[in-house]
Image 1 (tube, rainbow, N blue to C red):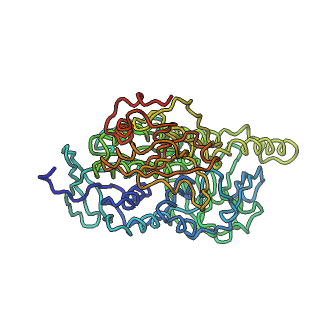
Image 2 (cartoon, rainbow, N blue to C red):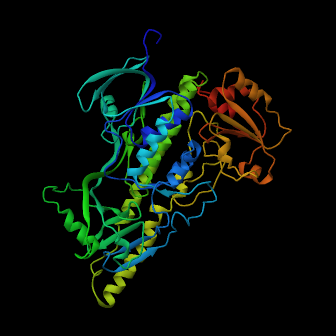
Image 3 (spheres, helix red, strand yellow):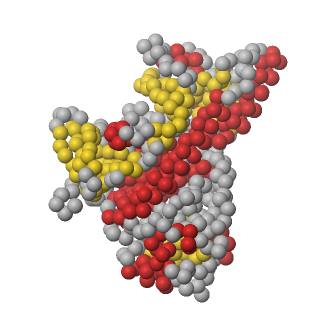
Length: 549
């Protein structure tokens, strides 16, 4: 390595949400990195709109959560979910959801979810990344090819305007370059799962005052059901005049030459009297896919390059953001010398099962959305039509709940077989989409509780490891000394609140930089250095020798 001059320790291919999240995480940690973005950073067709609670927790830690809350969305706009035949047609059911301003904080998190369309969220993330002196962003730069030389990665980068080629050398390369990833394709890593749930089409429209031009009231989403079942939805973008229509489609590729976007919009509006403007039309393929591996040598995959999923639930970007945070602290540890190679190996072992879990849950949401009972009479007048609409409405209320009420999946996933977490012998908790019960079991997100000084427990975690001690008589110095001797950042936090101690269950709890529990017990193990070796990835074996009795 000493004979090769590196241009950057971490080269990030792709400046979307995952790439910028990784840049922010690295910048927040003082780790230099370079981002390659094919365009100028703007988004002309928003695909995502809801920032889920786990991602908002990351934004809170990075100090940008107020920017997201105040992104420009109309936070007084009601976020109901409405099921109907069209905006001018029959109302089937309504799920009442508070506006962003009225939405209470969940008891398990210091933050709430927020509507922030991608046209604003991407630039917001880029601005935050660019504020770090250690982050370099190259616009109009596309990764053309790369070679992993074993000690470094050499990347060929093309200027998308001039065609000029240049070479960059990095210690590690991370492919955040989307579903058609050049990085993944170059590594010949196959995707596993279902390649076609449906071929869908998005229609981005402007329709000022739309919410006042029908009788269904404000909603985050209007889901349209016709005689042949669920047809699509209309989703709010800015809470004022911008909307996105999604035509669900089928497993057959549509003929785009004959596709009539105007007719689809009018069908969903249910009238020809409402004026609208079509801004853009984008076809896309709804999938349930996970890469066979997330790492090969010095090259990593994250975000859509590593996994693609149905947007039902809004978990795609959130999963990519969590990939970035998982990678960020591990890169810092290895680059600063206190983390071992097994720490980087743990990225694939931790994140790939979670990606598959979330992709499957998102696909299930989609199947529930389209598994509508017989709708043949849904437009009919009289008792038969009324009975059909009532039956369909009740079904959709139940089927659609996991699409938006999903805190369990957002916060309850855990790294069950992580080589850098020490099991304590307790039973694995079942992950459910809706319900989330906090636990400090190793491999789980450390629970949130409000501290007496107004901080969240989550505010204690991030820069390094945190050792929580709930009983001052328990010896902890040996672990602190061991960490100091190897340059590992570890702070001791004494807490004597009984309610918090009861939630965390043991007298000592070791929390990782990403806020996940690495180990817990009522006393230090006989060999604290072995514990430190395991949780920092210095050794990949003997984890189970530390099993807490």
